[in-house]
Length: 102
Image (cartoon, rainbow, N blue to C red; front, top):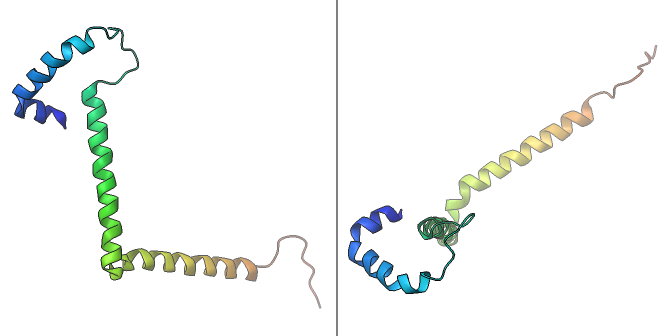
């Protein structure tokens, strides 16, 4: 994600690197286990996009309740399936010793 930004804004990157040089000069060089800033920002942008997609979907359901119809339909079908399963389980003879009644 940020690779494109680095290419698109080289002057901004150069300014950041120059201005942050003094601040980062005292930072330890051994950064084991730490993500690069680029990776952190990539993850942030990805999470932000996911959050926006969820918000958009929620808004769509709020604006148009029929948008939830496919989801409602799936849940209704699952309930029918569970009811059928329960009915079949209850109707099936219990296992064990069976005695013929004559």
